[in-house]
Length: 259
Image (tube, rainbow, N blue to C red; front, side):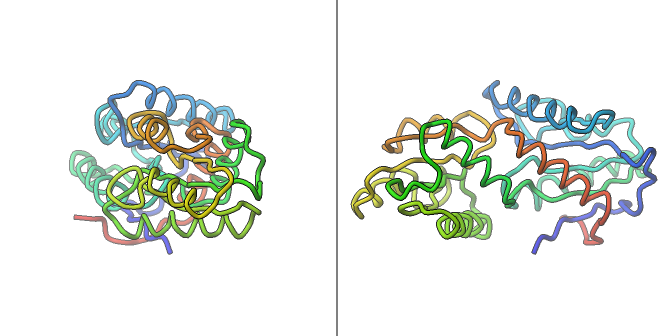
């Protein structure tokens, strides 16, 4: 069950035209490809919802900060542009929102859920595999589902469950979870284990939003037969983002913000 914190003062929002601004918060990266990917994703969301004020913010490395993106607003829906619920969505973002509220006590914010898990993200993963020449559900192909990894065991467990569900739903030879950092197996370990188990072909599906350090490292070191592209500005991600926005507008959860 999700427990998305609502920042103090985030009660019922006055919805001018029914559409408070959407502020999507990404992790941020020194790699310029990451910000370009986020911009393309938000452009796709704007095309799907003409007239919706869609803004970007970053936790680190890039501008604007969340406080800068919220400046001048009375109300907003803040959404973590993250694929799993972990430290950034549970601690860093609520703390940044608390800082923004301290600067402007009139600001009312609803804080929505992370993008994943969501069935449409699996569809996006399958699209990327198909683009790489992997038939979906190929019984001769084992898939390694690679996330960034987290020190939060709950976040890693979500990836493991996603891999098991994907294996049940499709006819893959197998699906295994792996983590680019902070947890094991690493992608290279997972690929090697599948080869030892007799997998005819191994494909890696990066459960990563944007290109950057982790994606490059996985592609360089995993040893798979095929490495699909990152999710990027996939249309499915734009749909999920807008679904999370609608959920947050309809039903904020009154839970104390992280301290």
